[in-house]
Structures are given as C-alpha cells and as structure tokens.
Length: 491
Image 1 (cartoon, rainbow, N blue to C red):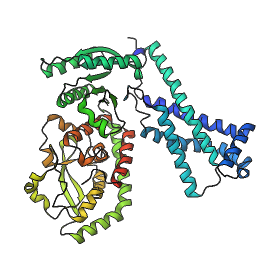
Image 2: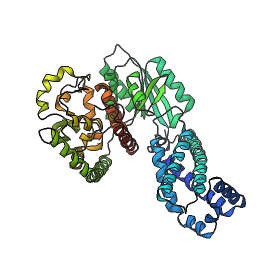
Image 3: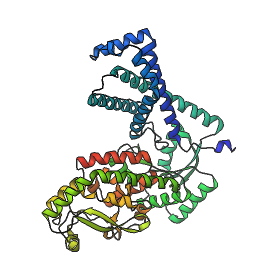
Image 4: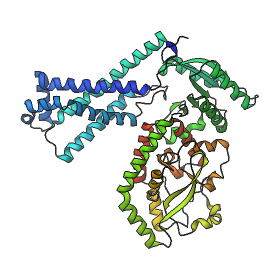
C-alpha cells in the first residue's frame, strides 16, 4: 500500500465540527440577507412577528441591521458553542463508535429545538426586547435543515476519498464464531461505516489454550497492520473478553465487542453502543497514551473542584453542624481508598454513620445486599437519620472536592473503593479499573449506582477508561446533576 493509502483521520469529529460550524455560519448570513435585503423575506418576518405578537415596527431599520452585522462573530460563536455542546451530548461527534445508521437528522433537530428554548428562556429572564424572536427561530430552523445536508456532503466526499485513494481506510480484523462473524461482515460490507474495511477473519478454536489464541491474534494484528479488531463470539466469557481488551490496549488499537456480557451498556447507559439482534456491540477506543492530555484533564478538574468547593462551602458548613448536633463524633470521616495503579490514599466524606461504626462492620457482613466485592446494605442500622438524607442526595461526597484539589482524584473517573472491597476482587481483570485516576462521579453513578452489581460496575469503569474524552465527561457531569437531584439508585 502507498504511503498516501496509510493516512488515517484519527479525529473524525473535527471534520463534523467544521461542517456544523459552516452550517451555522451559512444559516446566519442567509437569514440576515432574507431579513434585511429581500422583500419577500421582510414580508415573511413581519408575518411571523404578527403571529407571535411582536411589534414589527420596533425591529425594522438600520439600528438592528447594523447590530446583526457587527455582532455576527459573537452571535455565531455563541450559537456554535451551544449547539456543539448539545450535539456532543446527543452523540453526534462519536467518531467510529457506531457502525449502524445513527439518527443524525433527528438529533440535530432536537438539539436546535433545545438551543432555541435556552435562548428564549434567557430572553424572557433578562426581559430582552431588542432581539426579534423570529430571527433566532429562523436561524436555528435553517441550521436544522442545512446541518444534515452539509454532513451528508462531507460523508460523500469522505467515501469517494477512501475508495479512490485509500486514505482513511481502516483495516479491520474479525475474530469469533462463524455465524456472528458473518453478521458483522455483512453489515460492514453493506454500509461501509467510517472507512472500515475487512481484511482478516479468524475463527476461535475452543480446543486451543487461550494464551496461544491471544498470541496468534497479536501476531495477525502486527503482521497485517490491523487498525481495528472486532470480537464477535457469544461463547466467550467476560474474563476472556477482558484479556483480549488488555491485549489490544498493549497494541494501542480500538476494539469492538459483540457480546451479551456487555448488555449493561445497552440497558443502563443509553445510546452508547450499537445493538445487533438485541445484543450490545460495544466500542472501546485505543488505550490512552498521551500524558499531556491527562495532565490537562487533571488541571481542569482541580480548577473546577476549587470553584465548586468555594461555592458549596456554606452548605458544607451547615451539613457539618447538623452532623455534630445530631450524633457524637467528628463531622468528617476519613477512610483509606485504593486509587490509580492500586495506590492507597485518604478519602474524605461527611460522616453518615454513628461514630466508630466501621469497627463493627464484621458483625453486619452477613446482611450485605451486594454481590461480589462491594459492601452495601439498603437499610444499614449504623446510618444516622441525617446520614441517610446525605447519602440519598450524595451530599456526603462533597468533601471529596478537596481530594480532587489535592490531586488524589478527578471529577470524573471510576469510584475508589475501600481496601475491604479491593481485597475481595475475584477476577484479575477487575484491577483494570485502577488504570486511571479515580473520580467523584462516573458511569456507574449515573447508571443505577447501588442497583448494579460489582461485575457491571467494573464493565462500566473499563468502558469509560478506554473511551474517556471531554464529550463523555460532559455527559456524565450533566447526568450526575439529574441523578443526584432525583436520588436515583442511592442508599
């Protein structure tokens, strides 16, 4: 293959962002031209303003026209930031995560509708009567139409580039059972998603030691310059799947897994995976190797945690006072937790149990409601009345902002577990959840928390660590607010 044919677009979302920005800019100037330079456009806007009860005389004239031309960069930037965040939440910058058709047009329409509601709410709360509402309605309506068109043109150009030059063609290897391999092959050959091109197929031999199978797969990947590995075999146990994920982590290539063992991603973390015949088809990015990006994430977490710590300081003072007034003992509870690379650190929480309740844990082990390594009791007799309220709304976790500021944790990451739980891990792959910084919240927190078992929690943690990016972190942060407000899955 030529050197040109080996070129890959590793940040596909940047092209879609550029396309979306072009659609927003085009929409803005099209509507500006209609509003001020087209007779039928002025008639159209006058009609809309009459229907919505706006005074059309207020908005005609040179003042508004000059405002919209001089303020164009600022307004376009505001529209771009708002819509980009909404598009990201709606998984419109997911790269090669999905191979099946994703409802792009519907999600674009929904995001533009939400953006319009946000702007209207702002206008109402600030009593802003200068901006005609019709202008924002038509800009966002035009954008909702142009954005799918621009993305469609981009997809056509990318497909032609891939087919004619070989640029951005991703060599794909499928390993698994014959039936499931054929299903995936047919889908890829029919849809040609994101440049995926099947170059190798391999059927698992159940009679061969699994270590030899992994070595064979690694050799195939290296010898044939495989870019993406697909695992499609329902017979594989979860531990075997995780061994393969670890191997692809060493080789720094992404992997897709078709297995009902991943159905927790389908059932509890909505819109994160493809679904084929009712089975989750999960995408795991190549293992992160950029320490600079991780340093940026850590710095951002520290700054954000510092701001939140200052904001919540009065609330934390009230909580501390309530704890001291209603039960004996200190307001804070400090416990050893296991963090990144299995290193212990001291994590801080508000005390939710009676003083020294941890010393009698052995006596209540038989009442454990969780399976596996976790220890959870729905009606733990050691929890105080105030503590039960704090746990329900996760207010007991607020002191961990100090852990984030110190650098022990990040805002988003796998929850750090006590040593008691850590010492009860019963499969080697469970330790994979310690390959990244622990966090204040994570996929487990927004997907059912105490309603999920330990196995499911570990799957979510591994999925997050392989796929973490600013878009996923943003979604987790926003959904955490929702989950905490409605106390979902907490006890």
